[in-house]
Every structure is written in structure tokens, then in C-alpha cells.
Image 1 (cartoon, rainbow, N blue to C red):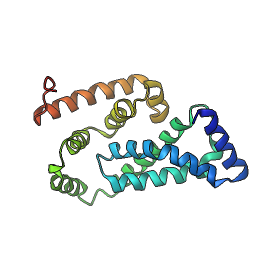
Image 2: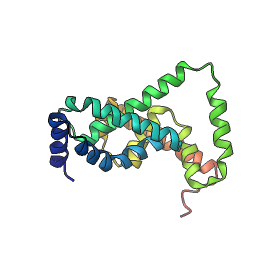
Image 3: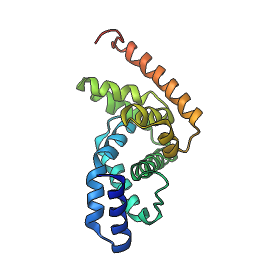
Length: 183
């Protein structure tokens, strides 16, 4: 489905309130949005599903504000990114709960899951902005320009986060038995 088809579906939703057209958009983009949020949440499937649902609800209610200045997928990723950061901010507001202890307990109980969990644990060592940039660039295969559109960060800052995040990931993985030369 091309960008033109997306625009036609968006028009049907906005003008005729055609929920079937929105269902088509959800089916097309739900896997990429869930994958993005799964990586941002370091493998928390339940949380990423909840955030994806919030993303599509916000997209539906805001669809009339879509101006086609960027692709629909970029606009939708921006919403997902904002939903994730709203969640992070709400967690910080509840800092009296010892969330790091809960997170570490959750992760240690799952440490035998294998390489997928190792990647999520490595991603968990990054700052949120580094994780976002790494996820969007390496896992979602988005360009620096699209990451700038999604995050609102300057291009130089995105590049810095990518460089620092990549170095931190490499260090973490090497310290945990992954060798760059072994394939």
C-alpha cells in the first residue's frame, strides 16, 4: 500500500468517518508500531501493546490534524514516541515507588530467555533518548531526517545519541560474552 493509498484511507476516515478505512491503516501499521514500542520498553510485551493501543486511539482522534508534511508512518511513529515519553514522564512522577527494583526483579526472573532478552537488557542500559534513536535507526531502519521528525531532536544530537548508544551497547554485549569477531 503506497502513501497515496494511505492518504485516500485517511480522507475516508476524516470525511466519512469510515472506521473500516482506519482498520486498514491499523492492520498495516500495527506490527511496526508494536515493534518500535517493544524495543523502547526493552521487551515488555504487555506494556508495548498497551502503548500501541494508546497510539492508535490518539491517531484516530487526531487524524484530521494530519497535514501530509511527512509520511503517515512518520506521523504515526511521532505519536507512538510521544505516548512512550508520556508514559516515562508519568513513571518519573511516581518515583516514590521503587520502579528500578521492580524492573530489575522483572528482568532477573527472565534472564534465561536468551539472546532476545540480552538485547533488551542491553537497550535498558541506555538513556531513553539514546534507546529511541538506536531503535528508530537500527531496528526500524529510519533515516536521520525521519528520526529528527519523530523525536524533534536536532540532527547532530540524534547522531551523538546513536554514536554513544552504539558504543554503550557494544561495551555491554562484550562484557556479557558477545564477541564482535565471533559470528
